[in-house]
Length: 408
Ligand code: KDG
Ligand code: MG
Image 1 (cartoon, rainbow, N blue to C red):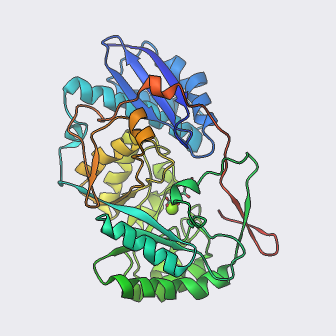
Image 2: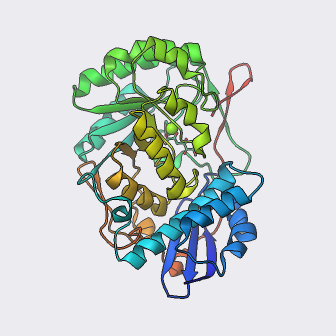
């Protein structure tokens, strides 16, 4: 069996999805997602210029060897661009393998460990009342877990994860008004004064059963993060995400000495080497990697297995950056993983998105039900894709009030 061709498509409804389609001489094809948010043309170039020319003629069933070939074979390893490109190839090869087996992908990992996978939605409010309404909205839809992000009184611009009034949070991650990022202002003192009490009020309003998550988005220093975690301890968060910059694997030691709040980190990691120390030292409770930027199913499964040895559960990244292809790959991992925790899931199911990526994966009462179709269980309609093309966009850049650059 041989790979005969592979194509990359960039574009989508309101997003620049990077979709890979790998064709074989037996008519079976596989799909992959390399959508590196706001840097989409780069994994597309890596695929077109380096990986695809090296895929043609190879046996698609040897996904492990091909992964090693691209990773070890490239002298300059890792990094989000290369790992997103390998990730897309890897997803496509697993898709082909499971289609050849006539099985849903999770069967190749060891079958299902659960009927449905708990997901969380994003509630957002420009102020606390607005946020309470947003949480109530998701609860009414059946969600059992909600990430809560709130505008901070006195902060000159919106804080992380907060949509402008009237916009859903799907629309704020990428600003398509140009390639030069907008700038936002961050003030740690105002955040530290407001947010712990806001979280306590949310717990009081919604009671003990709602699973509440909060994302600090790397904005606190280690000592501040420890103080914050200690202050929110009585709220009983499901997790506190990215309290410190993710590059520093030692930063969480201080927090761990002061708080037992569950910590989730890793959406920006792209290799097992970025989280090995965090996992082995049991400094985190949830791993946030995604198949999209962390080398696909082969590499993420390796991370999940290491996590299982250290009581770390999965909480894969599922921001709207990812296309339904990587969300499908994660749905299969979630169905299998013995150490599954939760899945971030932002409803991608607009009619345009469903038309571009038809699939039978579905959400029921806040749980993701994996499709039983062979392969990843998601398709890609090339005719639909013709109406979309790449649009430049960016994340905001964050500064302190005095102009100092800060972490987005
Ligand atoms: O592209 C950046 C987003 O993926 C990120 O800001 C989303 O932090 C995020 C989350 O937890 O979903
Ligand atoms: Mg996050």
